[in-house]
Image 1 (cartoon, rainbow, N blue to C red):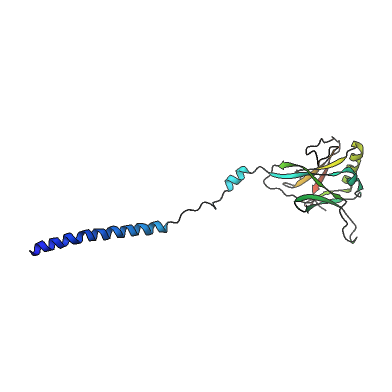
Image 2: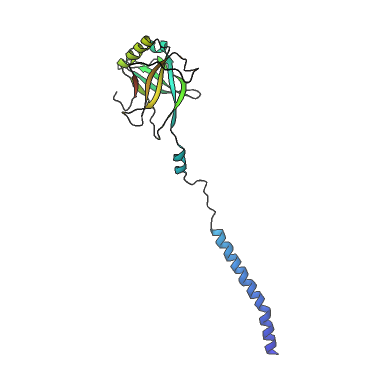
Length: 201
């Protein structure tokens, strides 16, 4: 009889032991799963993709009417990067004044926005540009010779100062504010507004 009861007890406890073992294994698996955080790829670097899609920087072709340019003094003139509310970025021309000459007057030339163009460069320095006194005089001469109604400032990469923007002076009789691709009048003398800095003042 003792042998029978021992066997019966073993049979009763065996399923309980197996159930406990299975339950422990399940809990261990759950803990292992909880310890593995989900991988967040939302902030993963996308440099390669961004660089592959980058084509350059878009800049505006700027202009002024010839009468306004002719009113500017025959002096070295700095065209200063200017922000005008609400979203206009342009250049304003200031003629140099003697040291201690008082406060700056309003700029005689404030360029307007015409069309736009793509500058194919992944690094571009856009800032102030400069026309020397002789450049200002040459532009006025070209205006008179060509009988041009408008003066264009067309951006391009400077071959002298890597990644800096210069502006080539052009002439047209088409209003660039209306015609975003005006017909440029050819001229034998090209004037360049060079970046300043880095050009020596």
